[in-house]
Image (cartoon, rainbow, N blue to C red):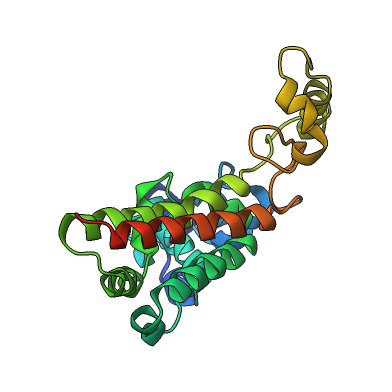
Length: 245
């Protein structure tokens, strides 16, 4: 008992804790907790408790602490997302279309990590550099060079992250059902004289369009608009690739 208390005071993990753990266990449990409770509720203290170790044991395997864990969790969103390399050169439009679709499918499996991607720069540590290389290959195949290559690259990455992150935005952590009911009532009660276009298209838009929805994409997917969005980005890239610099 005295030894345990001494270790608690020193904050040092026991050797059996270090040996019993590995990086894969830590990341898998972190992802489970985020899936279950959401990103805001995630902490290293809760992760250590779930794994049955002191928090210091986590730092032994992941010296970057919470940022390192979140970066590794972010990597799960990119697992098997990168399409085959040859398609990036042979058919850049097909490759980018597949990239967007694969990313959305991957993130929909773990929607609670959506706020981490793009919004927190630590998520960059979870990205396979092969993804960067192949996006550049696809865009070079499309004809982009120099600054336009950089701008096109930023457009693809922002486009890939942006729609899905917004689509999977989480509901309020507290009083979610009450908020949803109140917001739905506000939307459906819109003043048709002040906002005639919204009122005229309300049945089309309500809970199926950004800003005028009260459920997230995990419950109410927005796949049809996603397909339109991807084609709009590809069409824009195609047009810009053919225009003079």
